[in-house]
Length: 130
Image (cartoon, rainbow, N blue to C red; front, side):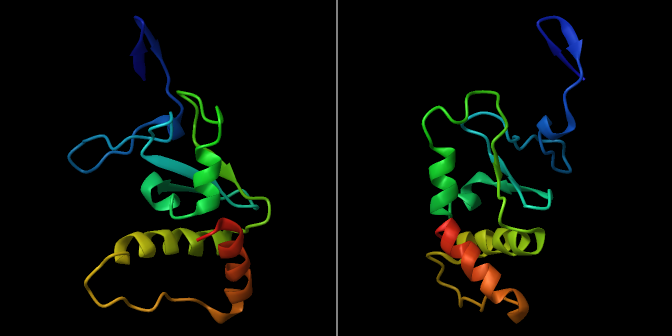
């Protein structure tokens, strides 16, 4: 529950801020400067991913920066009709891996990839431009 203009309203679960153990807010998926973006697989699974990480994808970056696409107070969501859960979850892992190791002076480990999804992952990476 939160107060808006003197009225108590219930805030939808997915609009609430993500909190750490000390109760500090880390933003949500709303508005053009949101810290997180919701990615939705073809089978309806949702991933809340840091905006900084999803911008690894040229395609997602173009969608999020499109003219008037995401007005203030709207949830930043990108749905993928052709990318199923098992592939999108691996793509999200890759976003984190890429952000972690880009310009890193540490030894870069090989990104773990199951051979049985290699072709699907390659097609998704090509589509997502990452």
